[in-house]
Length: 179
Image (cartoon, rainbow, N blue to C red; front, side, top):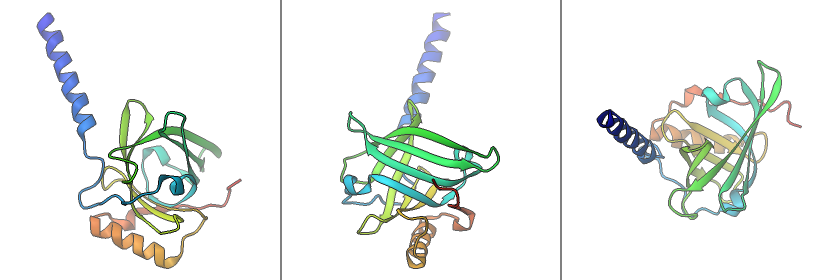
């Protein structure tokens, strides 16, 4: 019985180490450097995303970033569920993977599980951002306003395509109910 318990424990530890050691950024993507955390904080409108389980049926989505007392980044995501006809909110935290000068973070909404959050393009004024998740299944285009200029949109789509993203799969978010 002790042998089975020991084997189970070892397999569990190996599995958890595997989860923690997974790549946090897609191959070919490079996190912005130098990155200025203070300029990135605040509210962002989600312009487009690769749709996935946790944002299914959401429009009017925003992300607001602030600093927690312990130095991590508070992540406050909000959106309107078009099927349930109600606002939903998820709060998590993000930590820098390397240092605050590199826009390579890991974010968690369900501790102890983290996933990659990587700013791979941003304009000088920190008004528009292209964010890659841990794989080619996750991509976001963000803006400080409800819209993004056409030239910035095209530039970010090109960057994403060059990495390997299928940008035709992007869901373009409506912002018609923002309070």
